[in-house]
Length: 236
Image (cartoon, rainbow, N blue to C red):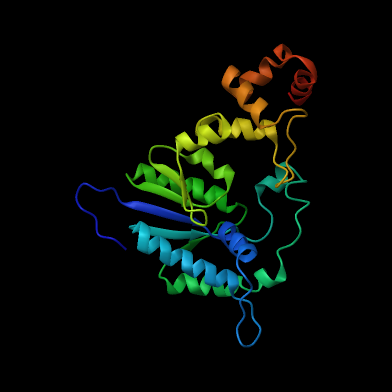
């Protein structure tokens, strides 16, 4: 890891491991050992870790995993991610070796039963910034963009793109602090989470910008005309 000058902040890089592994698995050509074991996702992870250490020079780096089994969101909504197919066996077979590789890099891995990687990453972002660190989340998950601030950014290593509050505002029409409300209105087909009928990204941003918060919007849902207003009233 890098050595800091007195004027530099320490940096905490948090890798959303499964997010990257899924992307690497689908993006890279299949690689196999002489015994036929697939290693493409492992290779992609190694290359990415080396790239982060070489180009970003973090003072701290950790990998976060989703714990196996259900989490508290399944208790809140039984349909959460219910439509997702199981992990491809060709990728699932690489996970044990992934952990061995991460340990060989000398990195800590974190997972908490009953919670997703996103929850752990959010906690680390809060802990890191409170400790005076600059936090960089290595992921492409849009849900994590809610965490962006002056001290927290998102690094999409596969696209070599860094996102902060300005980029979140440009993409969604609201800042990070309001993004959760916009996503709640939109819903998320990837996670099988329904939104409000007739409300897409643009309308969701317009409504949140007008009313400030989701709670305020629902309280004044009767002011919204047409079928969208009716759907908001029904959602209260």
